[in-house]
Length: 321
Image (tube, rainbow, N blue to C red; front, side, top):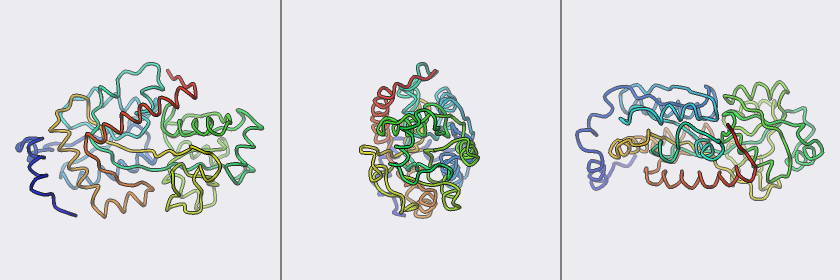
């Protein structure tokens, strides 16, 4: 890993204050993950927590707070002390919730401070083997002939990225597949394997073992290019749904109002770990690509995502309480 230049080190110290940088963290850090254990986001968050534990020589305690499309966990962090010892490991869901929910106990743009983008990943559309379709076009034809008779699950519940990925498919494909919310990917997976769900738009890491075992049929990935983990599975655009491209991101947030020097230190330490070849290999194995942005870059991305998903929410007429 390339050592930081003298100039970059100077700017980091100027941003965070030499004493605080040298001492942080002086106690355990709590990482809130707003989804149940075993999901793609939870797995990735735990990998990061382990790496930061090793880097900081302080425990990074994972605190799963599932429910309400990730809003329960996000609200916990939004109301936490602004000292850098409580952070939120979240996905695109937090940008979606800003417009999807009628009332929220927090304002994502005001009460959460973007620290750094951790990674990005694609979703894969899978179906139960009993469904008589082997392609996206066949699924569209089958669903159009049976409006509201098929269902898809989402691991993060109403307003989550998995939910909106499915609603975007409904919108662009001209079908009506009913959404069924779950608190975690494994819960949705169990019902899918049991045949209670017919389709699922979930993270590649969660679906991959079942795909390889022949228990689920993959039809398409949400990315703009094929996934190295599923090279024979087409993108949604290749499969016949023009304009469908979704790259779900994971990112780290601090409570709104957290001092800039605190945010800068956390972002620098996390980004340093994300550049490690060993860590990148671990993320690649999970089906995600490491990012590691500055707080300003992630803040700009977050604002764009809030605006982008607001358009999808409006077009799909989604209003959640």
